[in-house]
Image (cartoon, rainbow, N blue to C red; front, side):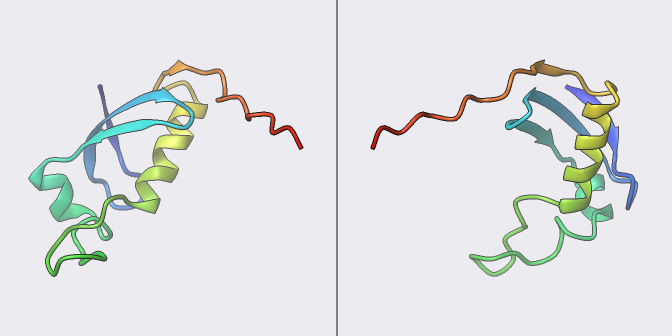
Length: 84
């Protein structure tokens, strides 16, 4: 996992891009406190955190496209062919 800072709020997390479709993110308490989305109330149980942050997702995508965060398997997941 690599450290990455959100370009919007500055939260620092650890990120791993297993593929373009799959990303692992580790948050710590400082990052949760700094993020405007992850710390706010999400759907489900009262007080439950949100599952993700759109600004961080955009930061990760930009970092992956720039090669800062490597994508372990860069080949896209093939679209299944459905026979009719």
